Image 1 (tube, one colour):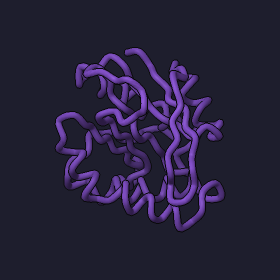
Image 2 (cartoon, helix red, strand yellow; image 1 turned 135 degrees about the horizontal axis):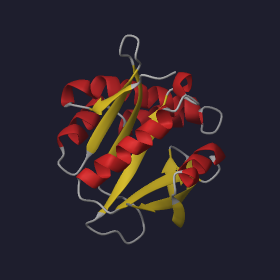
Image 3 (cartoon, one colour; image 1 turned 60 degrees about the horizontal axis):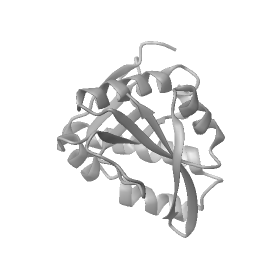
Length: 173
C-alpha cells in the first residue's frame, strides 16, 4: 500500500498517537512481556497527556502516520532528549519510538517513518540519532541495521516485573 500520510503531530493529535502507541506496543510485546506489565507500561509512558507534552516540547518531535483511506492513525515516531546510560551530547537525539500497526508492516511505512525521523532530527540540528531496542527483537534490530544504525552500548530496565536487555544503537547524520 502507498499513500500513507505522515505529518508532525500537534497537541490535538495526542489521543490518536496514544491510541496507536498502546495498540502497537501491545501487538509487539504480547507473548513477550506479561499482560499486566504491558498495560501498566502503556498507561505510564504512552498517555495522551504525555504525547501532548512532547508535541509542544522544543526538544521533541512527534510524527503521526495516517491511513490513506479515512486518516486512521497507523504509526508514529517520537524524537526527544536522550535517556541512556551512555555519554550523550547536545547534538544527540533519541528516536524513542517508531512503531506501526500490524496492518502497515511490510508496506514501506516503517522506512518512510525512519526517513521522516532522520529529517526531523536534522531539522533539530542534531548529528547523531540514538535508539534502544529489546535485544531479542530480531525483526527490529534487522530494520535498524538495514538503515545504517550500529550498536554502541547496552542498557537494562524494568517493564513491570520484567527485566529487559536493550541494545543502544546510533546513526551519524
